Image (cartoon, rainbow, N blue to C red):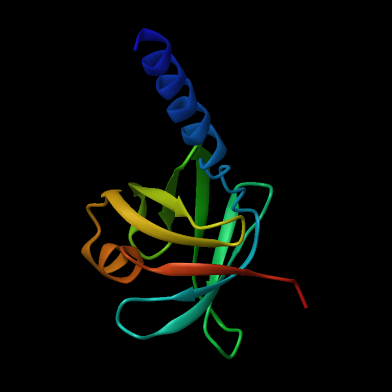
Length: 124
């Protein structure tokens, strides 16, 4: 019985490691699907800046971001640089994520970003 318990514990630990998705590098061009039904694009750049674009390619917000593990912290030009938001990135493979607010005091940004899904696109 003891050997079976050790085997099952080992098998469970192996399964947890095997089915843990890797953390997503958010640098790149993404299609954003907002809960409201609106669609947009966002470009996260390697220098820590980002810009969100309308379907027509017009910038409607830009700012700075940092990422650590599965949390992205952002500021933007609409809410103000002093209003830092933190969002959890829930990955579904390396190219699809859902964003969940951890902390955001800017209600307009939170309403737009919280619950949005994003799909990585190849840059045109």
